Length: 119
View 1 (cartoon, rainbow, N blue to C red):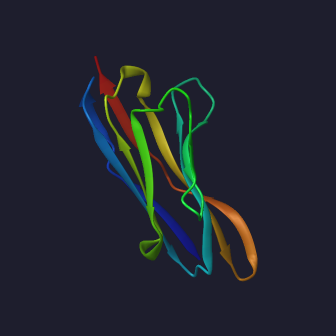
View 2 (cartoon, helix red, strand yellow):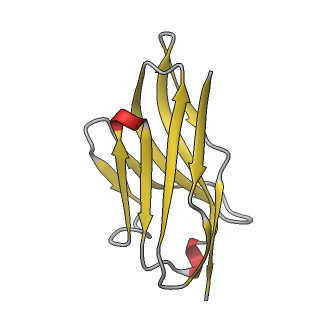
């Protein structure tokens, strides 16, 4: 059994910062990619940032230069530092982890954390 739990969302004014955290727990053999996605009301879920097991990263164009993804392999954790937030960053942010357990690899999702940026 695996759990993926996010924390750190909230309400912030435009220009402010938030840091999201996500940790995977349970019977885990290894974790490959980890990432953050977001879904705004009425829109499809979209990639925000991903980081692989070699710490290579990729970002959505809309967040480049403002957001930074990092991971702590020992803690099975991934973080998203969000700076210079804009109202259009308002969304539910979901953590995603590519986890291998019992010889099978699949993607696991967290329950989501709300980020609201006021203008």
